Length: 230
Length: 359
Image (cartoon, rainbow over all chains, first blue to last red):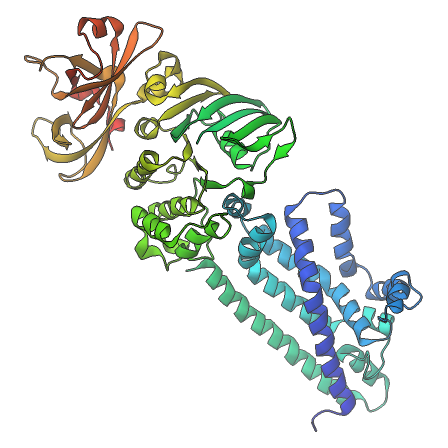
């Protein structure tokens, strides 16, 4: 590809890969947490709600530092993971973790709203017809909440594409390994003559974000129409 | 099969304490709103857990708080017809109907699906989504969905309350058919005297969370003690077709071959409607009456006679128009030598039929 230098190209590919995996892996967790917050009452619910939303309010650099402390090679969880061969710090997988954590509140908010909009009486009806809680969720709640789930996923993907502070703090800015679009732009702006590269990546960022939003809009509208059955 | 229910439950400002048996047929939980009807049905369904109680269908215990048994709703093998239908909007009518079948321990065979679809007249709706159905169609699908879950118990919480009168008379026959053909107990919540009169095999009359009276429908509906609960309005329910409107302000109706004359009804000739006749407005004569001002005379035979504790008795007369209940005194029963199988005439004054009883 002549339009982009190898370094720019790798940043684009890495960003897409990081965001894809961050979204895919956190989606089931996000759906579960959103369901728990929407439907259940349990001790510590407000605490969970606070924890989920914390990355939205904290300075990203603080989130990144906390990730480094926890998932770094000497961190409590990181050390254990290292023993089974999983290293997150200064790897692209770590970038995905940082992106997932930062995007999680947005994802959960969107999904929670759509689950709350599903009439719990329909779940009751499914129960009286023989569906267990899990089945009722899978066959009634989830399909009806699907537009919100899609919106949440796209929002998370877009947020992951743009994540900067936590990523650079947790996994640094290593070209080819952890240098994503935003950190690459930042890096190019630090060196003389890097503006051209920065600009190309800026244009790509905008294009990716706009495409994601448009696609999600169209898909969500189609799904909503399908769900409503009119 | 018989459903037996014993419950104690407290809600803010309300205490429920009931015990009753629901045999095969339709057991109507009857009472004003707030009397605890829906709470009972939801406890049977497992959607509400009572503080104390035992619920069983024959030997199968659904709930027994004394030994800590509490089956979740999905293991109770129910068919619950909700007031608002609660069809799944993202599924087609066909998928809605088959939803419970996937979970039933013994799957309903294809022939059973066809039978239910045909009985409810919903074959042409199968590929459609609930959003495009009328209220009456939705409710018929909801009934079908409950039936195809192969339930050992059917619950219905005011399934007709959200429908207009035309739609009600569209759905009522299906419940009658279920009652007449089924061995499955049906627990049916209603505060409509019309529905009770027409559907109930057994009536459980509720008042402020307690049972005021329970027993076979003819017994309970003829019991003076139940009257404060609004059962006074209960009586015979006749299906009739408007024949003509006369110049003297009366409408002529045909009820199973018998003629009925009522104060002018708004329905056009040929339209089918229901007429409810309160038991205390009906007289009984052994001979065909002559020289009588009452216009409506229905020939028939005595079906049952129930005597209460007071001076009154309820005589159920089978006529070509349907069953008519008459509230008469025990003295009259004796004087007329009324007994089961005796031929007699039920007499109703036209003006005794209130406008709100027609429709």
